[in-house]
Structures are given as structure tokens and as C-alpha cells.
Length: 181
Image (cartoon, rainbow, N blue to C red; front, top):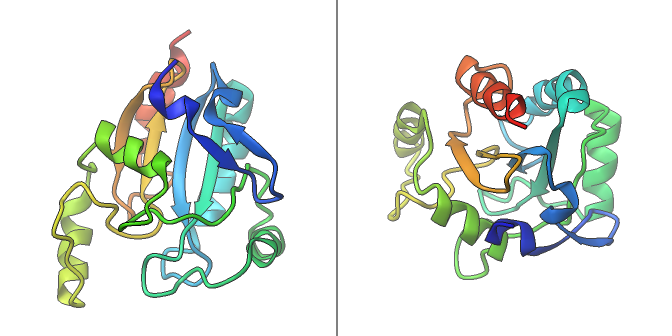
């Protein structure tokens, strides 16, 4: 079992678990936000979940308010927003920090395992144009950054925030991991 799988996390309803509860599944771990320009990605994530859950994919949403206050709501408000606006049925977790001194241990482990994101160049440059720069390239760049965790529990890939759920690079990575037994 990988270190990522042993880290305690709380479901959005407060139930404590670890990623080991998803052992044998392929995971797409995403830091999400309700008031971001990328928030419409929930729709694509839900479609991907509906298409691939039967094959062993689980999408895990971790709300975070690290980027310009774009996830200000309570856990209850976030859950209601996701349900009403995007019919989200994939597991959602309590709001955490994915950046800074209070970064959740899960995101420490994820970024240690995959210190760079595929496709982050254009989005990184776009953020620089808005005065947002990350000193450490391993830091989460923005909302909707995606990590793929294989069936073995190892973090196998990381994708930039603007890499959408239907991006061929992400889909190919997920399908390759789903094909493994």
C-alpha cells in the first residue's frame, strides 16, 4: 500500500476514511472550487465518472479555498452547489488546504510523488499575466489540478488545471491505468 493511501481524509459529510478504501480502483484526485473560471469542469468530471466508474474509476473532489477565495462556502454549501448545479455523484471531501503552511498531508504526498504537471506551461503563463506566480514549481498551480493514482496506489500522473476531463492526454492515462489488473 502506498503512503498516499494511508492518509486520513474526511468525506464532505464528515465520515473519516483513507484512500485505501478505494484500493484496486483508479483514482482521479482533483482540488475543486465553486467560484472559479474552471468550475464548469465539474460537468466534464461528472461525465467521465459516469462513463468510467463501471470500469473502476473513482473521482475524488477536494474543495480548497487557496486561490483568490474561490471556494468560500461551508462543506454543506459546497455539497449543495455541486449537486444542484452539476449533479455531482462522485465522492466529495471536506474542504482542505492544498497550498501553503497548512497544506493537507494528502497534497504533500501527491506533490512529492508528482512534482510537475503535464500541460501546465500555458496556464502558468496565463496566471503570470494576472500577477500570480508560484515560487515552487511543485506547488499546486490553481483549482482543478488533477492527479491520477493507479490501482496499485501509486501516483502515476499529474495534469494542469486547464487539462479538462475529456483531454486526450488525461483520458489515455486513465484508460491505461484501468487496463491494468
